[in-house]
Length: 212
Image (cartoon, rainbow, N blue to C red; front, top):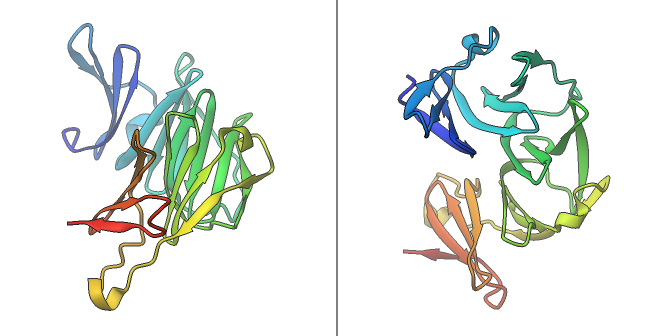
């Protein structure tokens, strides 16, 4: 199961790997794989995302956020609101770790999750990414949004949101509204990955177009 890689994160000479069998990393200088010897981490399987930030290791496993201190090899219990929902995505910009859930956007700060209200309201956040300007790219089951980097520390964050719903009568039973990935290219086009294919959004076009 350690060969089934769900996600990766590069931290200097270490490539952290989120796998079906837990968390491991590859040391690019020594050309060797290592499994962290954290007592609690040995019990964690089905890890889908991993990243590091300020001596913290973040893992998403079975919809939960697990945080470890790398130097002391200690697990941090993360107090969360009872309605925070299932963890779907994590990412960071500079030293800010953002968490996307089935109940909206959260910021990890002072070893806890703090809810960020979005305007307009976005409930399910399936993907979090960043463009070269540092803006946050948000994917949901109802469209996608762009949040200015300057809004990260605000209680209420403004999102330029574009609704993204396709005609399921045309596309079939499988809804493509669940966005899995977003990137912004040099020409400012937004490229959207979904379960049924690739879409491109350009401000001049008004709606995402499917790339066949």
